[in-house]
Length: 411
Ligand SMILES: Cc1cc2nc3c(=O)[nH]c(=O)nc-3n(C[C@H](O)[C@H](O)[C@H](O)COP(=O)(O)OP(=O)(O)OC[C@H]3O[C@@H](n4cnc5c(N)ncnc54)[C@H](O)[C@@H]3O)c2cc1C
Image (tube, rainbow, N blue to C red; front, side):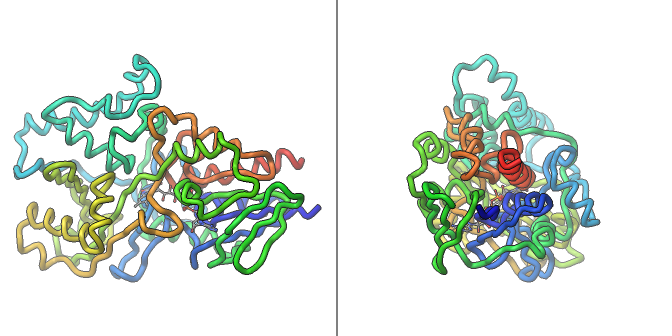
């Protein structure tokens, strides 16, 4: 039997699985729907005149994140992210008093104890159960949306608290997407070739594309859970119910970014405090000047607010970030802003969102998906990592795990 393994997707998980299998002498064929590698971790190097990650940029928990080793191997410049504080503005008010700021910050930190408080909670409640009351509750909800991409009521507290925090939050001036693109260089990837259907009832497995079919001894599927749930890739026979439930329990939240190139002599060109702009209702924007030590401002919108802005159409998220910058730095700051770009991950045809967040009651779904169907049909991708889910490092680690699952059963 052919020992060829077909990998669906050349994002972090697919790249890692491919490198791992090739190192063991396994024949691999990667199918990638897009024209470039990286998936949700991709660096735009042209629009702003400086590298800008449209998706994942931080190497979170660097001490335990496998991407840290990839960065070292590539000799990439690494910045320990140290924004030097937090500048928060709430609703229409321009400044918080010292006391208010302390209380605001304490409310945030309250989230970090969710794990301890979970021990006393029954079941797998939503993060909404851990949001403090007024006056700071709404702002804590904003932070949950910016971190998890979903609103607190749709976010499993068990899952949220499983993310493993370790020392080191790194950024790369070249962009994390550039790192992945270099890691994908030379791999056997066929681009612009989406897998349409996987017939895994047969021996060998057949993977259908619009250019024909490919035979495989095993398949590792790394596409997002939203792509799977939307049926953009189908399976024959249909996936067993427990896997379909797991996929449905891990929908993708939304985080969108807005980038502005800024004049080199602008105060926005140098790394400054994190600006949290809390508007009315559930509107929150996080803004980072001098992001990744580039003359670039990066704005973030998350959760339902991001979805609403993306539905409003191109330019809506850019407009709210521009307004927030004017409100904080004065109207003349507009002169410092040059080219801009805005992401729309919900509409991205091969992602359909930003990253997974388990629904309340579904914190076990990641392990179910990671177990796959059998050694011939395996699943990887950020949604399948137990503690670094929603990150590039988790996706990479899941690709290695799936490759090892395959290798373990083939000896
Ligand atoms: C705005 C934003 C900010 C983020 N910030 C961070 C951060 O700071 N740090 C961090 O660690 N993570 C961050 N993330 C998350 C991180 O980018 C993702 O978790 C990670 O890149 C996912 O990798 P993956 O391999 O699991 O999936 P993907 O990157 O989605 O890879 C799957 C690949 O499959 C391809 N594909 C889809 N369907 C098919 C098909 N039918 N056939 C063939 N190919 C197909 C896709 O094109 C894609 O290339 C962010 C994400 C977003 C969107």
